[in-house]
Image 1 (cartoon, rainbow, N blue to C red):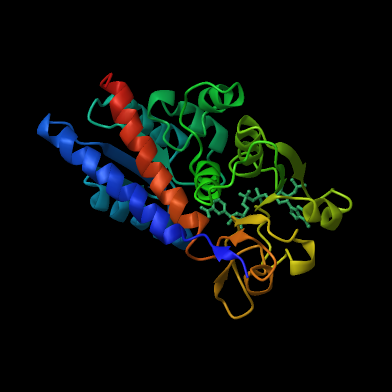
Image 2 (cartoon, rainbow, N blue to C red; image 1 turned 90 degrees about the vertical axis):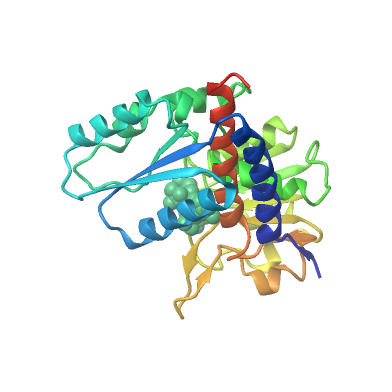
Length: 283
Ligand code: NAP
């Protein structure tokens, strides 16, 4: 049976480390501040935004949640972003996605100052990441790498397979694995022989969005399996893209859902916000 990668434990350790650093910064009069803009009242978004507020409190950060009506105009939203871009007290700025249909998501992401883009979604940060320069890494893929590294396994030279090619998870996860010198294969809905490709993976990162899609016969014995998926099963229970109960018998290491990537993603947002403050204050 494989070892479970405890996202709760590693996220707590990460936040504890951040909190210690924040206590030192406070002695110099500096407190990291994250602003989150939520448009409308999508229940899932509300849960995520509340979680971010809680994380900020745990890390000793200040937080501001700006809740805008679902009918807010794109221009009004852009004006609120610009206010935070120029407010020196705000270190990190994120806009909770998805946005209502009348608002152009790309335009909104583009409006966020790259220096405050702690989600790592702006084209400037994506570009820096792609060529391996210092930047804000997107939180979920960065969290996946951290969780793989907790196993002590050296990523270099391993066969890594990423299933999913979204801009926020699959593509950046593949790039980060490549930068760690893995040999990377990216799979998607048009991939043929998915099972055979998966069976070759020393490291398997799954970001599809389909409950229990990856079965134990797709896993190479001893592999590191990172499950990014967040789905509801037939009973309405939160579950991943990987059939955890069966796959943990084959994998060497595996993340659970809940208690895996999601918590580490949240901790990475806190790391990025602290990093933003340090860069803005040239520390
Ligand atoms: P997405 O934008 O919908 O992308 C899903 C990807 O899966 C696409 O690239 C799609 O391929 C691929 N795919 C769909 N069906 C497939 C199949 N049968 N075989 C192989 N590939 C298939 O989703 P996302 O935003 O990347 O999110 C993926 C999952 O992660 C969701 O469950 C989401 O809720 C979760 N998530 C979790 C966190 C976290 O913090 N834990 C953060 C973000 C997302 P095509 O490109 O060909 O369509």
